[in-house]
Amino acid sequence: SVFGGRSANAPASSDEEPKAVRALQSFQQQMQELQELLHDEASAEFCIVSIPTALSIAESERLMRELQHQGIAVRRAVINRLIDEDSGDAYLSRLARGQQQCLDELKELSLRCDVSMTEVPLFDVEVRAVYGLRAISVALFDA
Image (tube, rainbow, N blue to C red; front, side):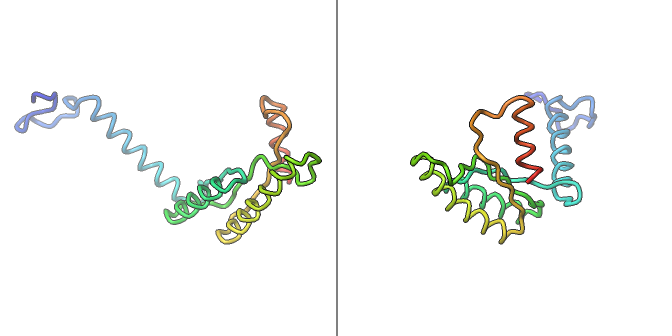
């Protein structure tokens, strides 16, 4: 045909199919396998990672509900960059109070949706390299 496909009366042969068609079929098969994997609660689950802000709460709630509606397991959530309420600085204390309100909403959401929640503090430096990963792992797994 003019567009590079086979004509209507040409024999169907996988050798004659354009590479793009085969690539799309392969991608479609991979997506089907991924969908099956994501719906197998014994093999896969989503862990929602969020920060304690109103917008992030709304996004996390929408995501959690949609994943559960689709039959995809969500059993954990991580709330990142928490500021300690006992911070001496007035600005940080105000931020911490605002975060605490959002955190309370997230805790309520996690209870309603039966999702365990882990809190990770705001670190005073950017979390990078092995040292940073160790600090994050302590916050995540030793809590």
